[in-house]
Length: 203
Image (cartoon, rainbow, N blue to C red; front, top):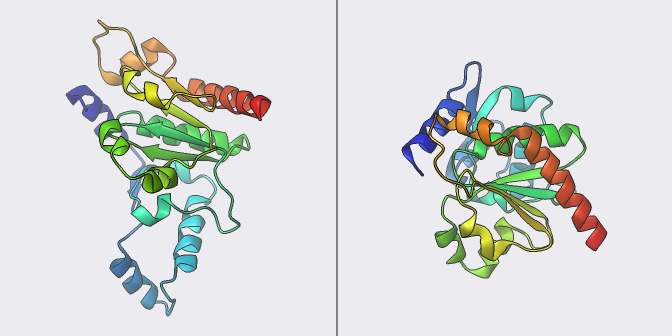
C-alpha cells in the first residue's frame, strides 16, 4: 500500500459522524461477553449476533469500517444464504466497496466485502482456505486502485476487475479516483449488475 492509499483509507476510517464497528472479537473475549447475559458462546449464537449487527437498517450510514474475526468470513447467514457476489479490495478501496455493498443491499443484491492486501500471500494459502474466503461459484468483482496485473490469474467468466492500468496521474487519492471515474460507488454497483447478468446468462 502506498502512502497516498494509506492516507485515503485513514481519512475514510475517521469520517465525521462515523465510527469503526468492533463486530467481532476473539472466541475467549466474546465468550465473556455472552456469559454476562447468560448466553452460551456457540457458533449459532455468534452467527446470530453478527447477523443482527450487519442487517441493522442504515448501519452503513454510521460506520466507516468493521473489525472482523476469522470465523465470520467463513459463515453464511443463518438460513444458509451465500452472497450473490463478492467485492474484493486491497486497501484504499475497501471503504468504496463497503459503501457499494450498502447500496447493492438496497437494490436487492447481497454482497460480501473481502479485503485481500496481498494476492501473493493469498495465493500461497491452502485451497480449502481460499475456497472459504472466495467460495467457488460466487461471482467476484475486484476493485483495485492500481494495476490489475496481479489479478489476471483470477479472471474468468464470473470474475471482473476494475483497475487502473495507466500512469502519470498525480493528486490526492479521492481526486484521482474521481478523475478516473470508474473507481466510484456508482460504477462498482453498475459493474456488479453487469457481472451478475453475465453470470446468469452463462449458467
